[in-house]
Image (cartoon, rainbow, N blue to C red; front, side, top):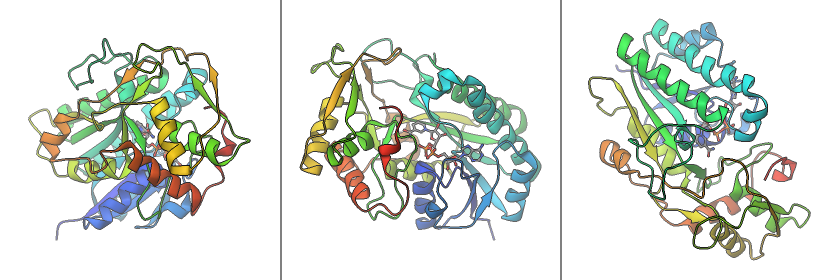
Length: 338
Ligand SMILES: NC(=O)c1ccc[n+]([C@@H]2O[C@H](COP(=O)([O-])OP(=O)(O)OC[C@H]3O[C@@H](n4cnc5c(N)ncnc54)[C@H](O)[C@@H]3O)[C@@H](O)[C@H]2O)c1
């Protein structure tokens, strides 16, 4: 019988746990590999947890062999752009050496398919207001983006040389929460706009800082492409079995292809919470582009992927429902950055 095991590194985290649910619903058997440094044991609901560091090649190899996996979905890593500027050493170590360890373990355990969590940060500052396609130039502007692009390039080289096959999925702004509230978003510190705006609406002691209202956009606030985490999860499941060309490697954008401004997010949070989040205005952050929106047609065509959540309000509503009834994680008020 063909194995249906999938090793999900970082499967105790936000996007990884949602993907484990989608895998289980589709008949796969997820095995979470996570050191729980930023994840939650309570989020591991659809298979076993192997505790380990992503740079531990021997432990990864053993986990792959013990659970007879045929593919790996690699989420584990560090995710904060701001922290990466101050501590690039951590990002090059965890995100780049982590990919190297996963690839070496896959070679040893003879596992053939890898799906990699990549990011819109690989593009850097877009040249214009057009949605970003995979053919746009890749010029990351911070160590986080550098480390993810380095991971992509290492994976592409392994595919060419050693016959692995891989898909790098470049997410835009992951957002929203599982409709049944079984898992959710619980980052500490929280740096994402939607959970911070919800916290500000529900807790007057946690005002939001908005960085810049003078961008060259219709309302002056910067625009991002918010894509629901359950839609992201579905794309990973689809990517596991897609036929790949001769190179064995493809990169694909995952976004709704539609941008929402910071003020549109605040409006949606106000509607969902019945109270407007208080915010103060800060200066623009260095390297914050006015607009980052995906051109997602490659993923739609190649994977047959169609995001179910097309509406920002529905995405925000799901995040508010989780905040009101979350099953794990301390309040997002433990934030350090907005
Ligand atoms: N959240 C977003 O909007 C977004 C956007 C683009 C790309 N991504 C990428 O998606 C992936 C997952 O993001 P997320 O928001 O779910 O993050 P998360 O922090 O919720 O999950 C990451 C998981 O990796 C684990 N981990 C971290 N370092 C580890 C190590 N050394 N060894 C083993 N496990 C380790 C953590 O414990 C955590 O469970 C990341 O690779 C990130 O770069 C996220």
